[in-house]
Image (tube, rainbow, N blue to C red; front, side, top):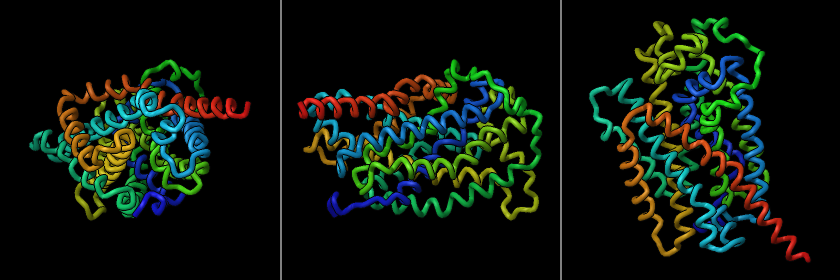
Length: 364
C-alpha cells in the first residue's frame, strides 16, 4: 500500500488524540497543577485547553497548503534538507525524550504499585511491544488504537465515576478566585505535556484528505477528555488536600486506591485502572516511535525505516534506565518545557512565516 492509498479519517484522528490523552495525563499532572497555584485549580487546566486549540489550529494551517506531505517534507521543500534538519532537530529530540520519559515513568508506576519485586530494567522492556506496533506501519497503529479506545475509554470513565466517593469540596476553595499566579510557575508550563498531542499532526497529516480541518478533530477529542482531566486534578485535591497532593508521588493512583469498592467483583480497582492506562501508554509510545522513524527516514531516505526504529527503541530503553529517580524524572519534565513550547507553537509559526515569505517573493 502506497502513501497515497493510506487515509486517516477525522474520526480516527480523534481516536488517536483520545488515546494520547489517556497515555499521558494520569500520574504527574495532578501534582504539577497543585504546585502551580494556591487558588482555583481548574483555571490552569482550562487555560491550557484553550492554548492547545490555538496550537492545533496553527499546525493545521501550516500543513494545509501542502496536502499529502508531512512536516519534514514541507520543511525540505521550503528551505532544503540541511536547514530543515537543524530546524526540526528540536522536534526529533522532543519526541525521543517523550518516549524515554514515558517508558521510565510507567515502569516506576508498575514497580511501586503492583510488581514491587520486579527490577526496573525488566519493566522498562515495555518498549518492545509498541516498537513492534510501529514497525507494522500507520495503518496497523490506527486500527490498534481504535480497538484500545473501545476497551479503555469506557473503563476509565467508569472508574472515574467511582472516584466521586469521599470528596471534600471545601478543600478545593477558592473555586472561582484567581490572580493568574500560575503564569509565573515552572510547574504550570511543565503541565503542558498532556496538551501537545496536536504536534503529531505534523506526521499523520500526510495521510489525511482535509488536513486543514484536523484541529476540529483535536477539539472534539480534547472536549470529550476534558472532564477526565478535571477529575485527575481535582480528585486528589478534594481527597487529600492541595498540600498533601503536592507531596504524593502518584496522587491520582492513591485516590483510586482509597475508593471503597467492596461491592465490585474485582479485588483491586487500582490494578484494573493501571492496567487500562498501560494499554493507552503502549498505543501512545507506538505512535511516537512511528513518527520518529518516519521523520528520520525522510531526512535520510537510504536508511531503512525498520533499522531506524530498532536503533531508536534501543536508545530510548538505555536512556530510560539512566534516569536515577522519580524526582529526576519530574525535573526532566519541567526542564523540557521550553523545548516543548518551541515545537508546539514557535516551530509551526516559523514554517508558516517561511511559506508566506516565499509566496510573497514569487508574487513580486
